[in-house]
Image (tube, rainbow, N blue to C red; front, side, top):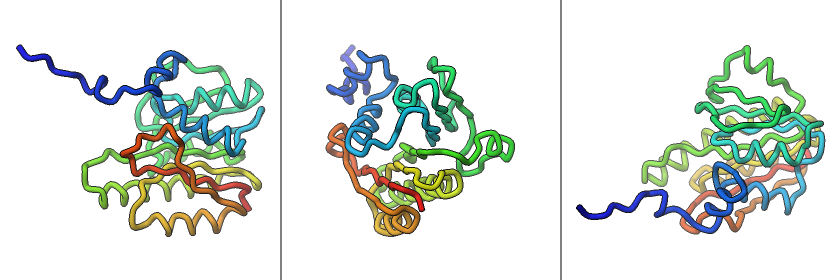
Length: 200
């Protein structure tokens, strides 16, 4: 019987191995780490909202940056199975249709709203980018309604026809904005991060 190579081995790289070594569930943690090192957005005792938080790497990293004095809240369609510190709370819900009860519990006084959400890709670049834009607009709405004045926003988007429109929307809400592609992004990926700094 021929040997079938698993997809895990196909996609494994330096960052995958490093994440496993440091007990993070996904390599995506290093994207947030690079963003934090460059822009210094998450501070001790901050309240952070992580949209699309599964499998939990960004939650874990944010929890370390805020310390136990902070509050880190995650929302995802998928339930998390990892162990998290006591100052982290996670809700299993649809961000596009957030139940009122969960919405009220989450509150509106966040220093940072961050989203690493991405649609299930189909190979149709235009369609994938359009679905990414829809998720990004939901994340930006959450930032608009739940960030404190002066707060920050981190959002992954697939570059497509609506990219410039999204930049304009972020620019309208924040005093400064940055476009950043971490080195830990896969080279073939069309993902990029839009950073909003100092919410008006």
